[in-house]
Length: 326
Image 1 (cartoon, rainbow, N blue to C red):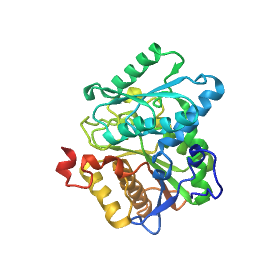
Image 2 (image 1 turned 60 degrees about the vertical axis):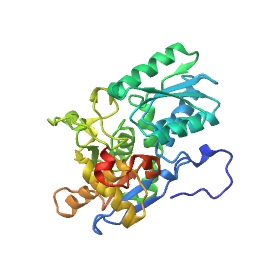
Image 3 (image 1 turned 180 degrees about the vertical axis):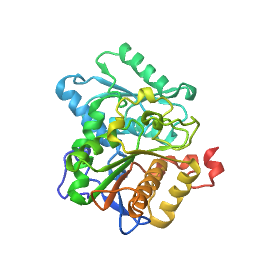
Image 4 (image 1 turned 120 degrees about the horizontal axis):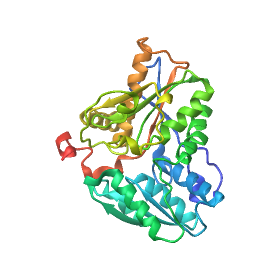
């Protein structure tokens, strides 16, 4: 839970310790709980890696003092890094594919960062290539590279995972999270498996994403509207460890959109599409446990609601499905 009770010196001191809240539509026998990451100062789970990774790179000299961080990002990571960079006297440049949220890009600029767009058709791979080109052109510039840097996983192993167990202890039976970089799930899963080796771990992606190919499934690639999770280029998702995952669950944009609206209407949760996907998946894992299809070492399923729907209002998340797809 949010535990800050004393005056703090910096906004960075408010990162983490987010509330853990019951998903009310989950079964009583196996309740689902979600970490509400919009309570972070930059309003997303990526604040965790922004602070953790920049502090670690400054400590070990990877990032020189007063240097520049250049990162390819869909938006929330940029905001998280920008919040941290501003407080740590580091410059920030972000490379963002054009199709991603305008709100996020505006916030990155408001925090003092420079934003450079790359063509949507080039995907995240194109943004990664451009970020490395820029870093070579600038003095004292580093690409933290959230898709491959172990510090991404470590941030969640050191913060998100322990917070869950401080709240629930040995009640945790499963950890479920969407994978974009996969850092959140991998860090939480590593910590969870150390607490109990039989903890059930499920990754989440939208239909059309290719994470399932990394666990040996033959799936058809397609476009999806759900943001922040999924991949069209599995080779760039170096942090994903199939050995840590029991299942990869996928859901259609339509089902995710319906759940996003249900969470707002019925549960007062103004969360975005990745959170809706996580809710569907975590509830599915809970249902399977209740039905005896899977066995969990504890009676609770844990997931994350990574950010707020307010960041996507311009995309019509609360309108009809066809408008959102358009």
